[in-house]
Length: 160
Image 1 (cartoon, rainbow, N blue to C red):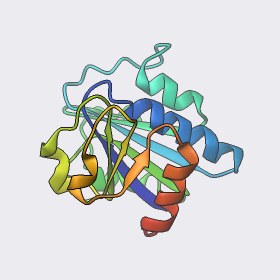
Image 2 (image 1 turned 135 degrees about the horizontal axis):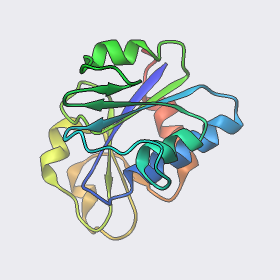
Image 3 (image 1 turned 180 degrees about the vertical axis):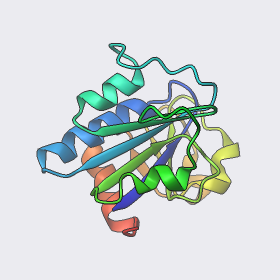
């Protein structure tokens, strides 16, 4: 399984990118799992347009990791290790958030880039809205080119 996490500011495009990757991989009959971090336990499940519903509609299996509960709907929080174990037979596992976990990570940046993410990331997926990102000496991926990002993942992310 290839595990890759996505980090970025709110409304940078993380959910949309993960959604596009999942939809593409499903056309290739790949098993996709998605873990979404919900640190404030405010996720609304099965609500049209919300992240968890959007992820699920791609055909991926989805887990929400909250502060006091995890959904696969347990009445307690699970460790990330335990949660990742639920997806052991999948081809890809995408994690949204949880920036300090030791997973390969792509920062999604649109309109601004938060340098606090630099210690955690291996690449930046961006559009043309931010100048001078090449100065960070990280691979720059076209946020609007799902296939380019997937190719980078397939080349650079080792099987776990």
